Length: 265
Image (cartoon, rainbow, N blue to C red; front, side):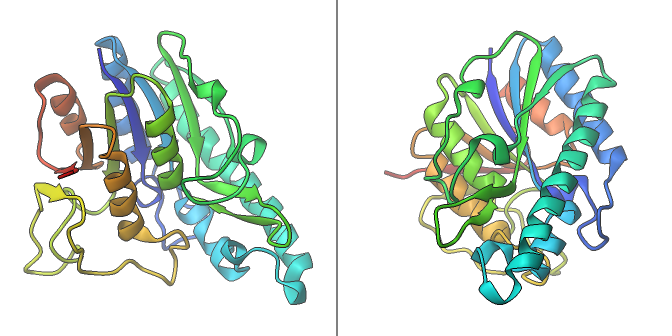
């Protein structure tokens, strides 16, 4: 049986252009897929992004940069707001999962993580063992950092890297995207954009993410994170989250439409 670490992108489960706007229909389809995988005997851990529940306020108050003296009072208010907003989004995710009779747990990073980037610290022991049928969830969040920074943004993609490295028996790390079939040769919407079915670690990515909204690095961070994970996992994929049946196809048949990330070394 597979042990699947799955990232639901923030742009998949929310409308990133509208403040705190969830896409419940997408969550519902994803939850049905998780139900089907669970029924087949596979175990799943879900990490999800922030989308419009985190990036806009984090961008406005420059939370990624840490404490800035001239605006620190407003920043600390924003830290509290974003954490509450992320709990709300996680609650919506869990509610959809539970509507399919799945048992879930939430482990907010602000409770257990410290620092940012894939080398962040804090115990991940809660994720090390998993009761059969239990879906453990966590997400990108504002976390405490050492002084003078005080706080920062821990991306769900960085959580994926550490989990893949340290949690035993993970078989698949899957990034579910909201706007593409996988990694593309140029940004989605470009007429000449084509799916890259196999991405070799160290290749050069063209294109850019929407820095007006995204505070964690967009597709480039996902690629970098996937490349790191491919150093110790052989099944690392980027798949269109709008077509969740492809995840089941991958797990059951070994391949699907999407991008497989491989480490040449």
